[in-house]
Image (cartoon, rainbow, N blue to C red; front, side):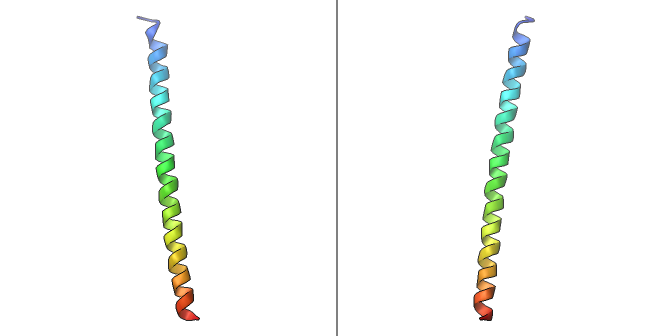
Length: 50
């Protein structure tokens, strides 16, 4: 029974790392989307003023 414990911890850590990576990627995608929207809006405003 004692031998299985480290493996379980490693699996939990791997799952946790995968989750962290997915969350980070999701965040990066959302951030870049927001940046693009902001740039578009800024460009539109600049086009209107000229």
